[in-house]
Length: 405
Ligand SMILES: Cc1cc2nc3c(=O)[nH]c(=O)nc-3n(C[C@H](O)[C@H](O)[C@H](O)COP(=O)(O)OP(=O)(O)OC[C@H]3O[C@@H](n4cnc5c(N)ncnc54)[C@H](O)[C@@H]3O)c2cc1C
Image (tube, rainbow, N blue to C red):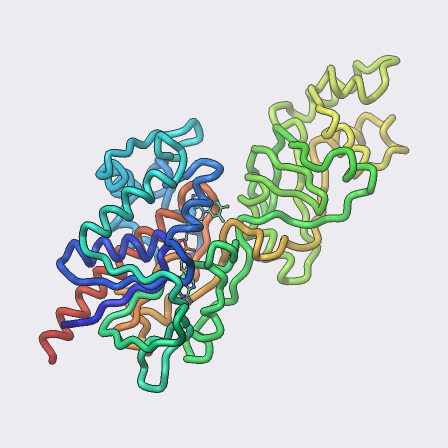
């Protein structure tokens, strides 16, 4: 009887287990933490964004340079397939105003609960508090368990260990060293969908940390997006900033100065801003910015923070400042705080079935692979798609294994 092991009880590992069990294969899932799906539950805190409803070609393009590598797996488990899978639990989904897809209850808890029940009913053997620590000299899997270290022989193994952010959920990226020691090609883990640091003045920080800047457009590397961000003690965060985390990180990695070009009134042309500013009369600048351009207190103070106050009487200067405000940043926030990580097992270390080329029978899936994506449901969709693909790869491998032996 083949021994099938899955290590890591996140979305990628759990969907792989479901796929293998549905094919009649017995599966043991090992999880380091006392329970599975901890990051999945956290993902549901602000509304579980499962996937996105935009046209499929646009959806795939969101994976940037990894789109070509991921597309074969996404083709086999599309955003529609993901929604249908959620519906199979009797849980409905809806499309939000931005095209993002959520379960009606928004949370991950109800979905995880019925999913765990389905897996248990299908016969999953679950071993929690089993931390995989590597392979022994015989090539067996080694685990730290509450009763000491154990070795497990496995015919086919899936490693679905997650990225390196939010280590308190169990995904701490500690597998990197083990993989590197085994000669597997790894791209360094880096924060993705993260905040960035800059030095604010004490006055600005003390009065405006936690305040949103909206609506605003930002341009980075020639790409313009509209949205909002939040001023923090350390710098900036929020959806607009996360969307630019890849190009900003790349500039900083090259030791080049990184900045966002902000347009504080994205719905007004430069001419209109200029015309509005010309009507100021004897009003104070702050109250005119409020009434003529709808500026919030934090937006007004951002101008004072970043602009040259001595030139605020010059309407050309002020117009340019409002439409092209330079906001420099110094570095990304630490990986622990990021929503996701870039980097991981490179695709050239894997077969099309997501098996390590140097370790027949060992497969990888989920966020631990070398891809990244913005928020919007792209992260979970690729974790599910690669988890499912790796399980199908394991089934192919097991068929070949039983024919050969
Ligand atoms: C705050 C937050 C909000 C998010 N919101 C969304 C969202 O709305 N939409 C979206 O698409 N994505 C979201 N994400 C990202 C998404 O949750 C992850 O991309 C996804 O959970 C990754 O799935 P995975 O199965 O690859 O790994 P994980 O979910 O990280 O699971 C990996 C599992 O492996 C276990 N493990 C690790 N090492 C070992 C070991 N050595 N031995 C045994 N077990 C081990 C871990 O304990 C963990 O349970 C969010 C993430 C965060 C942090």
